[in-house]
Image 1 (cartoon, rainbow, N blue to C red):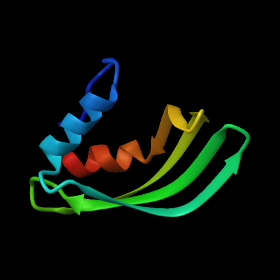
Image 2: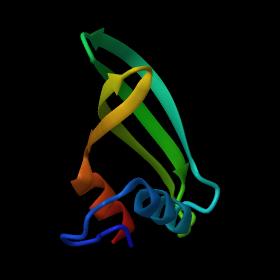
Image 3: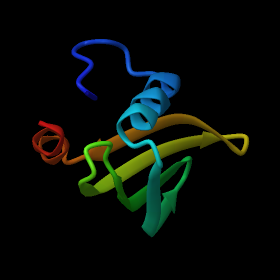
Image 4: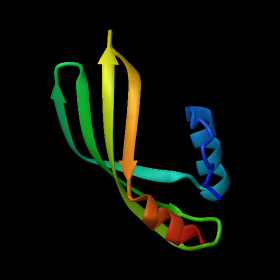
Amino acid sequence: MLGLGHQIFTPSIALAAISAEFPSGLTYTVGALIAEQDRVAAEVGSTGVHLNGKPYANHHHFLFTVRDGQIVVANEYMDTKHLHDFVI
């Protein structure tokens, strides 16, 4: 299950959790992008099939900080209650 308590959530932990829960992965669809100074905001939808066989869909907001053409900070906001209720 994706619940990790108060553990530091690194990209490698996130990818491992997604791979474990969604063996076929998730598909992300970008709906809108807004850039201002060194930040880029993205509205994104995700879909996939959970290992329990149920189809999954959620909405995300990503806020990236970019320096020298590289993403240096990535924050993700999503409906975590929806995800929790889905996997329980």
